[in-house]
Length: 281
Ligand SMILES: Nc1nc2c(c(=O)[nH]1)N[C@@H](CN(C=O)c1ccc(C(=O)N[C@@H](CCC(=O)O)C(=O)O)cc1)CN2
Ligand SMILES: [Mg+2]
Image 1 (cartoon, helix red, strand yellow):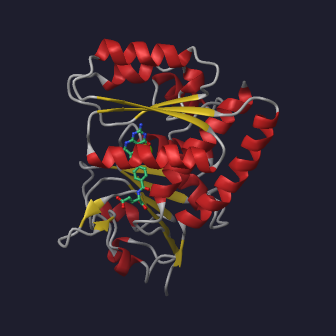
Image 2 (image 1 turned 90 degrees about the vertical axis):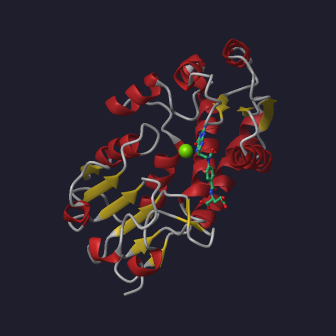
Image 3 (image 1 turned 120 degrees about the vertical axis):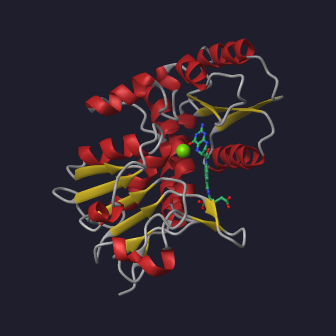
């Protein structure tokens, strides 16, 4: 058996075209969607991500502002910038690129963003909205994973989904989104003994641990959907995910590649949250 590839680039293109037409409709009413992206410091990967976010905004017709600050920016200065953007009617979404320099408390920064503009969905209130099923912004990476799963046409009702990883930004919200879609959810993590015992029972596995070869073919039920959130490097420095793609594609029904799977969807769902924010205004 050879799994069908779930193409995050193709799905992103389709969703971004829909977002662009919604943006055009808002712009025609004088309400162009706007996203503010803040980067503190010179982390090379973060520089690429923020550049890609700003470019993605331009591609779908959003207004965007990129604010770049030196790594020694004071926490109070960053909080003051966020407060100004909270009060800027041209801005519907505010995103502070993570990770932040060590001297800045990321929780304080995230909580300073108005919930109505928290398009990363990282704040305590956004997490509570997800937990209780209220309308709100879903964190972009797990939201993108849900769209990738939906694109397979498989109904999650009654299916067993196993999430590997319990981070606040991916694992935990992923579990809640799967639960909302009526899956039976198991969350595994670094203290789970015999991971394969759980994953072999799963109809859907989402791997989000940040360690390559966490999931191998012998740990996957034939016909399962495998979503790989990982971004790691192999021995040759090549980008790879958390799962053994070559082995698992012979067992799974559907699998996301790395690169080209979950990654592009993270930025697409940021655009989705931003258009939803602008439409709510
Ligand atoms: N404020 C935020 N910070 C961070 C987030 C986030 O969602 N909000 N997520 C990550 C980084 N990230 C976006 O910010 C991100 C990571 C990866 C990709 C992506 O498209 N990856 C490509 C491969 C890229 C490569 O070749 O290196 C892929 O998987 O195809 C997009 C966005 C942490 N910080
Ligand atoms: Mg993310």
